[in-house]
Image (tube, rainbow over all chains, first blue to last red; front, side):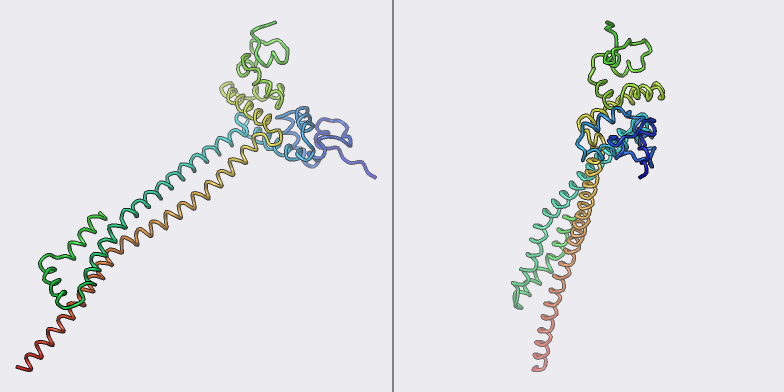
Length: 165
Length: 152
């Protein structure tokens, strides 16, 4: 039966690591840096109090978030995690703006299509139904006379062109 | 009792020196600010941190420490890291929504282009139909002429 090595916190604090050491499960001896930065930013005493106030099943997550915050503070002593939060908030704002612009574009396209379709269908139906109705030679000859004098097809095409331009 | 003590020195029950490093950032009229920061970070750590920074950056550092402390008081498990997770989820969600919306725009635009091409197709359909009718008439009149000429 060998004696277990002290946890990283007790090693740094130079004290005896007891069986019920509150830090031992979360600060193993093979990762001394983790406790070092947490101690530097929060202090061992504060971390101990924080862990004691939490149920056991939440302590691991708490230690992870404390280590994350401490790491951020060591990298950026002025802003710490707040720097990352500002950056992410800006990203969210930009994305929301882009989304609003894109949704507006969809509305515009849909409105254009809705206003275009009735005019287009009316023209097509006028031309084709007229021709379908003229299904005998007499009617066709009348149409030809009418067409030669007034260029019906060209007028219809011009009307469509003016709509689209 | 020195009425001019900053919130930090009042809380710590000590004399507030003229060059107290905490005094500019923890004024006496906002005691809760120091209480939060001291509870999470500790006065000693905050002092060391501020001492390592140039003077013009200390105010921002004190503000960010207060923000983190407040987040940790409100959420003892995740602190401000919970806010980071939430923002990352929002970003992911917004990116998905944006990609979906841009795909819809692409579909609608291609539909609109197809619709623009259709009027010209309709016109050519009408012209083709008209040409067929003209051809039919020409065939009929030719055969009439031919038959009349033959008879004659």
